[in-house]
Image 1 (cartoon, rainbow, N blue to C red):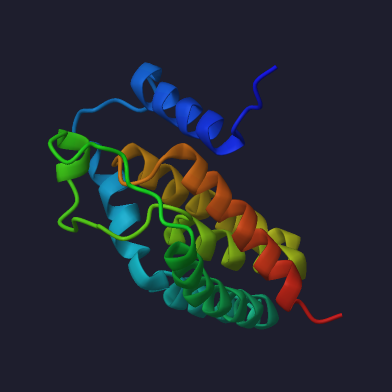
Image 2 (cartoon, rainbow, N blue to C red):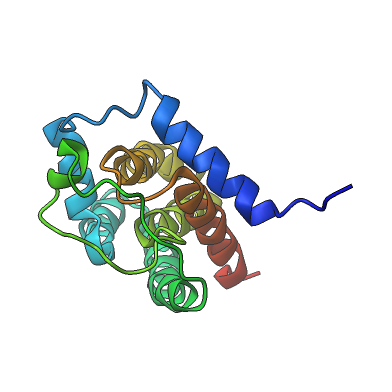
Length: 173
């Protein structure tokens, strides 16, 4: 019996999910999807979100979120250097051309998703109410990376899992 290559199986699932999914059309995404992807670049969106959280009395959650995101972003860049993966071949699709950036770095993990999950998980661990408020933004940012065709679905899922792990790892006991 031939052995299966799990990475090849994941790659095939990714290709099938983007090819066969009505949820991920190739047309230009709505402006809110493009905006979510752009504002999350470099983790910049989490600073004003943390400021809002601090302003409504969730200072500890805001600080923990920023610490987790601050660890996740460079860690994601290090991981992407260690695990090179080509991005989806979509450079000519309107979905991909909606973004001004043309990333050529490794696709795995999605640094946007990893940083978002680290921030959201850390905030939620400190304050479930604040975490619930931040969760939709985390989800939209993660979705935007697949919808704009700059990542495979498994890159985004991997980024979310790794980001959550970072949040729990940096959490004080």
